[in-house]
Every structure is written in structure tokens, then in C-alpha cells.
Length: 315
Image 1: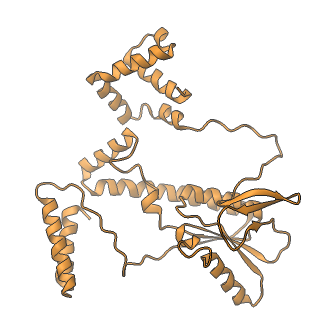
Image 2: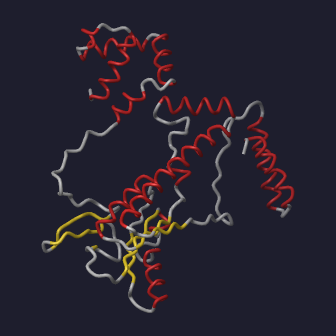
Image 3: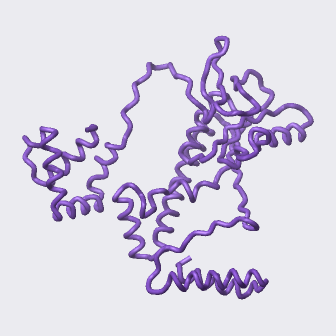
């Protein structure tokens, strides 16, 4: 049993009225908590505690990683920069790519020129399905060199597939080890998909599922959407505030590139969630009507059916 799990069990045992002597014995403690949770009133009480956030601290402690060992002042170990790993070649600290790419070794910058541009982002920025033969980093480097007519720029590919906001900010911080002159952030495609996994009826934590259900009950299908939007805004603000602080501390400019959305030939069909009464059947009937209207070129009828679908599912 980890320290966090033990804290959680002791908190539950105390709530259940288990004597202190019994709480000191691990086996007796677990048995007492299991017995309490097996009773309907005990399980209901535990769920109320979760809903009230009374156990959040001990749950967080159970999930928290152990504290890192302190390093003596003035010493700082090299650390990875995205998919670049620190290494030593001929007594020099370098970074070696752990993926197939045009550049295999990244060395510390030694001269003012060429200006070093760090390109960060997700699968699009990494050139997914085209890399390593063609990547946005290669294209950007070629365009910058063509614009000035000299090899005064180098673009370091720091993009990673499935990049998250938190790891993006961490990669920006770690990139200072190679002295970038400019940071380019090409991200945003993954935010709706990866940044709010807890806003789901399938979230692993009970409290997350409870919040989802509460919003669904109170506001319908728009409730969880608003919950996810609020969480995403907060995480975006936190990540970019951190990036701004890091870049400002070393006076490195930051350029944010928002990916465009291709709606011309992209389809992402998802089944409608549960609707009251015959709502699901009506929704699918409208979907078939809209598809048939599109097939015969009747765009007004297709739009009318789509609006009716939106009215049914709450947008």
C-alpha cells in the first residue's frame, strides 16, 4: 500500500468510526474500510465525500509522484528536449534524436548566426505521414533562408505527435538548453481531443464521472460541453502564461501559429448520445434525410435537416 493509499484508507476509516488501534494495523485497516464500503450506507457516504471534494487531497497524494532527490546548488543535469535525448560526444554535451530525421545531433549554439528557430507542435507540425522526408521544420528553414538569401537560419524540429499543452510548455522550457533565438508554436489540433479526458462518462475517477453526470442532468448535452470548454480555457491560459514567463525571462520572441481547419473533405461522424423519448430515432431519420438531400444537390433541404438535428441534440 502506498503512502497516499494508506492516507485515503485512514481517512475513510476515521469517517467510518474505526478505532485508532485498528487503523494502525494495515490488514485490519483495509478490512475495516472494505467492510464499511460494502454496506450501502457506507458506500453512499463515500460517494458524498467524493462529491463534496473532502477526499481530493488524499486522492491527489495517492497519485502524486515521489519527490525528486535534491541536486546540489549550481549543478543541473541535462534533460530531454521533446524527442531529443542528452548525450556526450567527444566530451561535449549534445542532444541526439530518438527518431529518424534529417538532423541526428543537436549541438549547443556557438555563434550569433545562424539564428536558431525552435518549432514546437503536434503531429501536423511534426509532418506526420511525410516525415522524415518532408517536414514543416525543413520547409520553414528553406523559406527563411530564401527570404534573406543566406543560410542565416536553422530550424530545430521539436514537434511531437500527440503533444499536450503541459508537455508543450515543458518542451519550451527544456529547449533553453540549446539557446533558441525564436520559438514557433504550431499547435491546437489536439486540444479538444486530448486536454479534457476527465469530462467523460468513462473517466477513471468516480468524482469526474459525477461531475459529468451533474452537468448532464442540470443542462442537458450542453452541460458537459461547457464543462470541457471551461477546463480547456484554464489549461490553455496556464500553459501559455508559463511559456510567456519562460520566453520573457530570456527575451526570446514567441510566434503562435493556429492550424486551419479543413472542412471541405474531412468527416468525423459520431453517434448521438442518449436522447429522451424517440429522440435518437428522429435524429438518425433526419441524418438520412440530410444525406439524401446532399446527394441530389438540395442544399437547402440538407441544411434544414441539419438544423433540426442540432435542435434535438443540443448542438
